[in-house]
Image 1 (cartoon, rainbow, N blue to C red):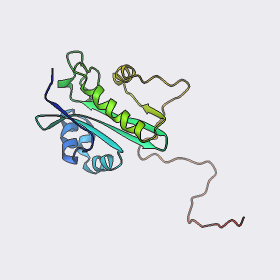
Image 2 (image 1 turned 90 degrees about the vertical axis):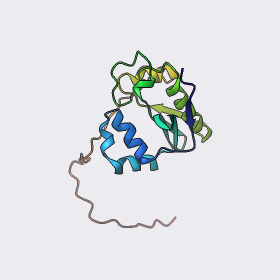
Image 3 (image 1 turned 180 degrees about the vertical axis):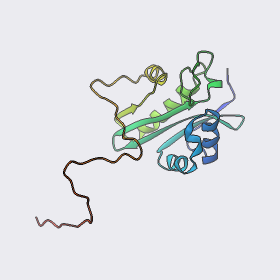
Image 4 (image 1 turned 135 degrees about the horizontal axis):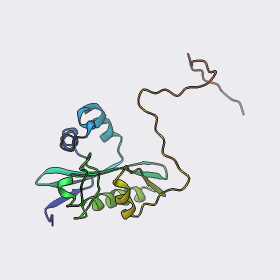
Length: 171
């Protein structure tokens, strides 16, 4: 179907490429150059899909010790096939040509090669089906929680930390 898709595993997209991709998907992340730069810098591995030198999709992974995460897998809805209905934020809801699957597979392979024993993915809405088709399973007993930007962790009966001190313990 799309024989001219080029996958790259060792070359992250530029800030401008990601901003343009997010803007085409009407993703609110498209307006924040600083956050997109930080996203690129803090990502362990990127896999991109390009057609005629245009970024049409990407997947990225993060790793900490033996824990890895498929942090994001996005594909322009124009390349997802006719079952892509919501066309929201580049979320993968259909992958007729297998482009998103290939990007995700390559990220997972890199995470495993780096020693990740457990690889997780967080999915929103239609992404759940896509992740389950890849082989991810729902984790029993876990609840996803978030701490929104600007919300501080409240501590009952605590006093603010004004200074830090170093303490030496003699063994």
